[in-house]
Length: 133
Image (tube, rainbow, N blue to C red; front, side, top):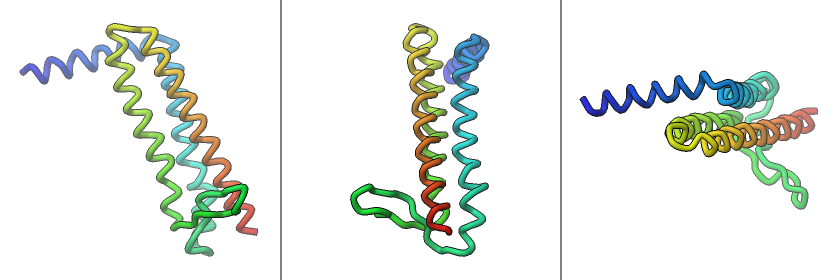
């Protein structure tokens, strides 16, 4: 019974947090970055995967391509980003009850980290497109 009450309070706090406009927009923007991070390799790299069994996953300015892998390893970054998004949303909800400023700082940090993940995915896709031709 206690667990059910705590979950009920948690989801009530999450609803209250997400009805606050700045938290809603930050969560939507971070989720949009997560979706773009997952959609970009689906649209641009999966058509190339039939022609090549291994694709470049990392580029180093000193050595060039230094990590190759199967095409499905490209989805580690979107999965990591989505897990981070869910974890930060959980921490935000806990912090929202006591410290709204801390919850807002976590929300902004989530958006920034998801944007960095999206930038990394764009660079990986560009690397793969340059090696495809």
